Image (cartoon, rainbow, N blue to C red; front, side, top):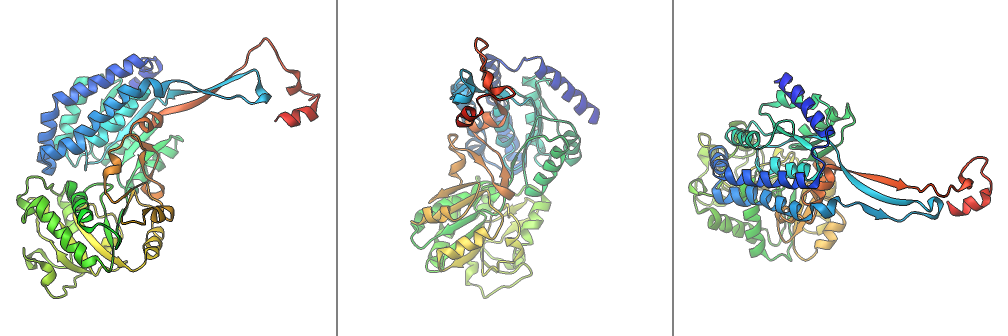
Length: 473
C-alpha cells in the first residue's frame, strides 16, 4: 500500500505539471463525467448507505446525492466567471503598471472523508478540486465499508489514477498518505484527528482545510415559536440519528418554556418517526458498536430499566453519567439502534457535556437571562454551528462566535451554496461550498505588469527627489 500511494502520488505530480488539468473545458468535462458517474452508481450508493447506516433512499438523496449534484451544477454554471482574472487598481507609485489577481490551482490535493455523510463529504470537496484544476487523492472512511467499496469502484471506473485516485484503509493508510507532500489537505473529521492532520501538514508547510465539529448549542428563548422550533429541532436531531457535524448538540431552554417545549419535542419525534423509531424506515443506526457503547455510557439508567412509556413520569433516576432520563434511552446492540433521548437535570461537568455527542441524545440546560447563555457558550470552544430560536438573534450572534449559525432553524445553512461553510477555532479552519470551494483549492496570485517604454528614475538609488517620493508612497 505504501508503495502504491507513493507511486500514484508521483504520477499525479507529473500529470499536474504537464498542464493537463488547467484548461476550463477539461475541468467542465471532468465535472460532467463525475455527475454521470454518480447517476450511474446512484442505486448501488443508496443500497450501500442503507447497509452501513440504515439510511433510507430519501434521506440518502436529500442529504448526500442531491447536494453533490447541486454543487456540480453550480460550478459548471459559474466556473468561468470565478476563474476570470480580477483587475485591481494600481497606486500612483507604480504607474503606469497594471495589476490583477489570477487564480491558479494549488496542485496535488488529498481529501480525507468521514463516515457520517460518506458520499457528500468525499465528493463535494472533489468538485472543488476538479473545478479549480487540481488533481485529487481520495480516502473514504473504513467505518462504512460498503459505501467505500462502491465509491472506490466508481472513481476508478471514471478517472485515471494519475488524475483522481482513491484508496481504502484504516488510520495506518491515513498516516501513509499524510507522509507525502501535498499542495492542500482537505480533512473532515473530529478535532482530535484534525490536530494530527495539521501536525503532519506542518512538516511540509502544507495548507489545510479542516472541517471539524464541536458541541453546537441549540438555544430556545421564551420568545420562540415553540411549535415550529420543536418541529425543526426534532428533525435536526433525528437526521442521520444525530450523527451530523452540525447537529444541535445540546439544548439551552429558557426555564419558563422548558416543560412545554420538551413535550412538543417528544410529540414531534413521534410524528416524524412514529411511536417506535426502531421500526421507522427513516431513522439511521449508529455507525459502530464502539460508537453505540460510548453513547450508552451517557445514559443515567440501563436499557432494561427504561420503558416505552413517558419516562419523565418516573422518579429521579440518577446514574453514573448524571442527569435524569426524560424521554427515550432505548437501544438494541444487535442492530446498533438508539432512540431519540432527552436528559434533564444535567450538570455542566457531566460527561455528556464534555465532548461532541454525535448521536440522538439531547442534554438539557436551562437559563433565566440570555446573557447566561452567552457566557456559557463563549467560555467553551467555538462550535461549528449555533442555533437560536426567538426574537433576539442579532444580540446572540453579536456576542458569540461559531462556524455558521441559523436563527429560528437548524442545519439549513449548509444547503445554501452561496455562503461559505466551515468552522472557526476548534471547529475547523477554511471553508467550502460553491465559489468558496473553488477558492479553497486555488491560489490567488497577484500579478503586476509594468511596461518598458518608460522607466521612472526616482525609485533607484541614490533616491533623487526623495521628498516627492515620500508624498507618493
